[in-house]
Length: 356
Image (tube, rainbow, N blue to C red):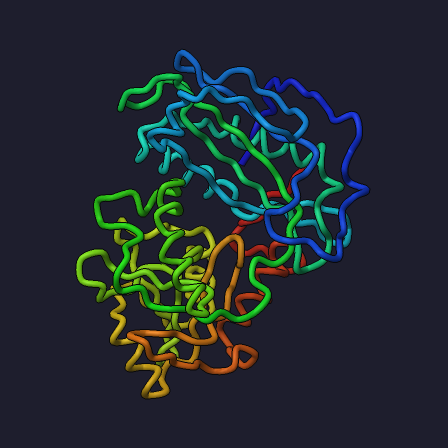
């Protein structure tokens, strides 16, 4: 993916905050690097491309995204290996999904050169913020929101695209206890579930809060009509190993098409593991647990990579799963992806983007 550097105005920080970083206690999404990227969509063109010190941005009280929710984002990571080389993992997928989200939310498209030039310039300036240990990375958050100062229900004519970066540790530090959600809905077919839109996450916060109060870490979302079929798990796509087959819900229009999901499916097929993308019934998963044919359950996503599921609760019954330490498929995937993202093993699918 060749990207020409655009003309980007640079304003560097006077005093870096790098010396204040506690590298041994990085929390996910709590600390932000010195700089951020910003561009504005005005009169049908992207303009005012700049990198400036990370900080607050002024907004009018009439900013349309506040009132009508035209806001989308992406999540990606930069990795640094022992030789100091910096890599991104399949960033072209994030760019394509960003524009798919923009299309669904009736927002402006981001050219690849704007998206990637902003990412590259930030990494160039803040490369010393990228952790080197295997459990950490630099999380990259591109996002866009409507900026018309107008109180009226219509698509905005102006937008702001920004990128911020954050040195982060592991998203989850333990296997998860999850609950099958059979009352609330994350998304419905024909809605915005396949877009990485801010409102999807806003609507999920209350049922997730209720689950945490009951002792669960995440929810398994089910279909909006009958709550019969599994869709995804909180911040991740979800996968099961049943009878030796890797099974995951097929993309239905209400499920986010994850980059890690796609990568896992390609890897396991290449390893000659039987893979099924299809509707997955809740009852099928519970029956497999009871029969002992479900050997693994895990979430996959950029933030977590592989998140092991320790137990699944359904209709007030908690089902304990196998010991995560002995899970062959998901642990192999975790190890392979962690090494691949730092160019320690062969990049067979040409997924790595080396930042020069």
